[in-house]
Length: 89
Image (cartoon, rainbow, N blue to C red; front, side, top):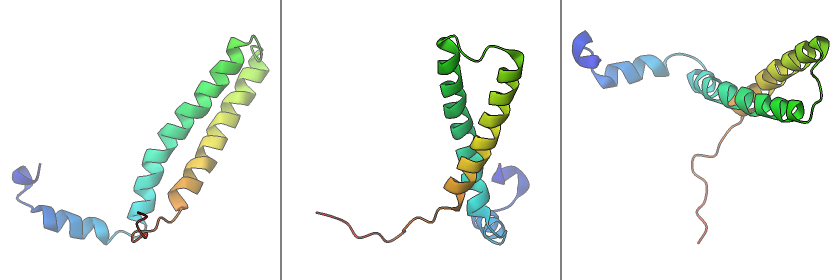
């Protein structure tokens, strides 16, 4: 990709680092699909127990999964991780 544009990797990295909260945006982009998939799977497990098949329940749980996924992904994206954590032996 960089060979086609004539840009170096260092130029790209410098450009990305100038965007405020880029790490948070990237973490949210990874966390949201994972949390949505996890919570959707739990929703399907509930359906396997023959519960929640009425259209009102399907819609309600769908919105609940979406909202909970956004909330969980935001929490995960905003978490700070220690870069220089002490190593245990």
